[in-house]
Every structure is written in structure tokens, then in C-alpha cells.
Image 1 (cartoon, rainbow over the protein chains, first blue to last red):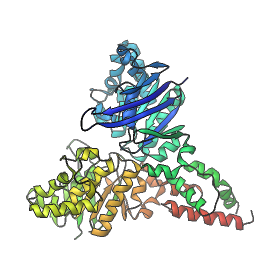
Image 2 (image 1 turned 60 degrees about the vertical axis):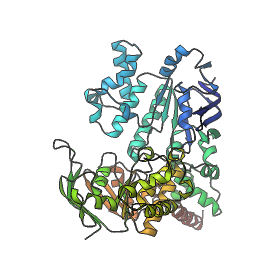
Image 3 (image 1 turned 90 degrees about the vertical axis):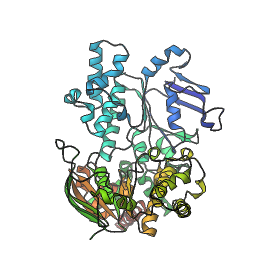
Image 4 (image 1 turned 30 degrees about the vertical axis):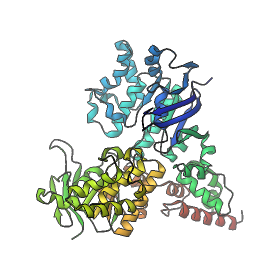
Length: 286
Length: 278
């Protein structure tokens, strides 16, 4: 059974005004437990609107979101618990830091859940460990940290709530290449160790190819296609038309094939290397 | 004298805090297209803000076209020469109609209405947004909004445009649109471009790349010469474009930055392989 099931979801902004605008339309999407799913789409395609329905921040005009088989809005009073189970991390989450110390900031979520001091402490330490935040940072002000560190603290605050599903809206926007690589390795390690479900939005095709197990493409408020990294990035022309792109390394192989070669398309540098290994081995032997 | 000159420039926000830029000297000529790279916190934005006087050097001196960037009395002259586009497209649009937003700059400079009309139309045509002139900016895509922001600067007839991570929040197509607009301004109008980015692919399209690290300029040169310092690039938290990464791993030492060039070198390798009797 899917952990999250979205059925015929439609959301209209500024309904019954001259500015009425259909943000997402008839979205059907199933997310399995333990998956890492990337959502890609042009700006304004409805990605952020979609993910804000996943934990009930938005209520759809039509359609239903099921978590573990039940409608998240079945009991309105229960929506708070749904938000503990489905953790949503906004773009630039570091702007939401507010506490005096890193510890207090990470503890804010569990504290609001009414957990005991001991349990809160345990959760703060566990979350900090997952996010690779050194222990000595816990007593520092979050505002004395670097941009990338602040972001990890903000994300630890979400992990401390211990959600089943982690939803991340462009988690690496504005980070330098090393910061991006570190954050994605943290996210994949967290997923491997906990077996939890991760959904992330990204504009970096290289990162999507490296991290995701499944890719969902949103265009103009609808799902244009979904499938494995291979299935999606082999449709380069369609992606380009939708304002998206393919990894740089894939472009190299498309070019080679245009020149009469017959390579399998690749999406990461390592895959490219594997395919070209025979050539390099010959060179090494020479 | 160069168009933009940094002479022994140092900067820190607070006496007690760490020095962000330490004794930097550099010069940029008119018509340059300079990509500025560096990890988060390396001082890229500080560097940019010193050029248009948003920040003032603690020691040393920054001049643009001979104007001292720290001089309050010539601030207007400086701002007319140097415009800046910021990261978030939604934070820099002030009007509710595209063409009014573009007119905001020249209006504030006291330009005559007929002249403003001409400049606004021309600027919007240059960035390919003329047909959207009567539209409301909030209905535009991120890339379109950034192009409107660029048009707003163009309408002030600048000599230099600074892009401070202006593509960070855009989708691939938006990034491409902005980059191609900027390239055109540089090549056809000779506008000097200072382009701050975390996307290495964008930096490969500039004429010159500088890498900031630890308060200083670590690398400076053409994209090929800068990226060929593979180890240094990785040490300072940056990356090289994927085609070059592949070349390195294949044992090819030539710095290859774009997909087409990479493909043709691979073809050579494949032919070699066939020739050697396999």
C-alpha cells in the first residue's frame, strides 16, 4: 500500500475573482514507503502548491490526500497529527530560525508535541546527528552559523518531530556545490538509516539524477510524466519544451549518438565512466 | 585606469568580526564579462556591493569609471553606471505593471517622459519582454521577472550590471533565458557584466572567472585556466562541470567545459581504441 496517495487533486487560487487561477489540476500520485522521489517542473508549474497539500497546509478544492490509507482531512482535529507525520521543509528554511540556541530551535517541534524533557533531548541529539551538526554547536546561537549550517539546523528541527515522510522544497537552493553535495549525502544517508520516505523538489537535473529513485514531472499544474531517472531523462526534447533540462553529461552522450555511435544514455559521471571503461582500460595498457 | 578598480580593499561588517575581504586588488575593463565564484560566505556578495556603494570599504579604495565608490557626493553618478539584479525575483519588482516597473529607475533620475517611453520600450525589447509590457509582473515566470529587473536597469543606461546569484531561484529554462540576455548585453552593447553564481556551467560562458576564498582572490583567468586548477576548485568547495569531471576520470588532462567538445574528444578516444586493434 502507498504511504501517500493523492487522488484527483485540484487547487484554484483566488477563486471567484478576476484573478482566478488553477494552480494544480487533477493530480494523481502514489508515493511508496521508503522511496526517494524528486519533483521537477518549471517555476510556477504548481510544485510548491502540490507539496503544501501533502501535510494539509492547503486544503484542495477537489480531490483527496490519503496518508496510510485514510483521508488526511477525515477528521479536521487530527490535521495537527498529520503535520507531525509529514514534515514539510520550505525553501530557505533558515529564515525561520528564531531561538537563542541551536538546541532550543531544534527542540521547538518536539516541545510543541508535548513530549517529556528526556524524549525532547533524545530527539534533538538524534536529529543533530543525522544532519551532521557538531555537538558543540547546540549551545551556540543559530545566527552565528554559516548559511549551509543554518539550513541544516532548520532541517534538524523537522527531523526532531520524527516524521514518516520528509518533504523538501528545493533543499539546496542557493548553496555552493560542496554544500549541495553534503546536504544530499546527508538526506540519502538519513533515508537509508531510517527507511523513511523522502520527497524533494529540485531545479538541478544533475542532483535529481544522482539522488532520486523516481522522478515526477509537473507542467502547467498537471503531472506530465513520471518514472525512473532513466525513463525521464531519456525524454530530453519533452523536458526542454517544459522549461527543464537534462544533466550535462547526458548531453555528451546524446551528441555521441547523433554522430552515429550507439551508447546507452547516462545520467551521472560514474555511469558514463562505467560505460567508457573499456576505452580507458586500453589506454592504461598502452 | 581600468573601468573598475579595487586597490588594497578590505572589509568586515564589525570591528570584532572576521575580515570578509582582505586586501584585495583587481581591475576590470569595460566590456568584461566576469563570473565570480566562491563558497557560501566567501565574500562574493560583499565584493559586488562594494562596486555600487551599497557597502563601503573599511580600507583601500574602489573606483568605477574614475568615481570613488565611497564618496557620498557622487553616489548618483555611480548608481547610474552600475545596476544590480538580486537573487529573489519577487523582492525587486515595485510596480504592478511591467512597463511601469521598468520606468521606475529613469523616473527617479528625472529623465523626461518622452525619453522614458523610448528607453522603456527599447529595454523591454532588448530582453525579449516587450510583448509583456502591459502585464502584471506577478503572472510572470521567475526568469521573466529577472529579465524585467534587468530591463529596469537598462532603462538607466548603465555601463555595468551586477548579477548577484540572479539565477539561483530559477528553473533551467529561466537560467538559460537570463544568461542569454546578459550575454547579448555584453556582446552587443558592450555592458560590463559581473556575474555571481553557484552554477559552474554558467561560469564557463563568461570571458573571465575569479574565485574568492578566505578573503582573497584565489584564482583569476579564463574559464578554462581557472577550472583546470581541479584540486584547488574542489578544495574551496566548488566543482567542475561534468564533462571535465569525466575527462579527468578518463585520464585526459585537457580542460573541457562543454558537452560538444567533450563528445568530440571521446570520439577521438574511441577511434584510437578501434585503431589499436580491439
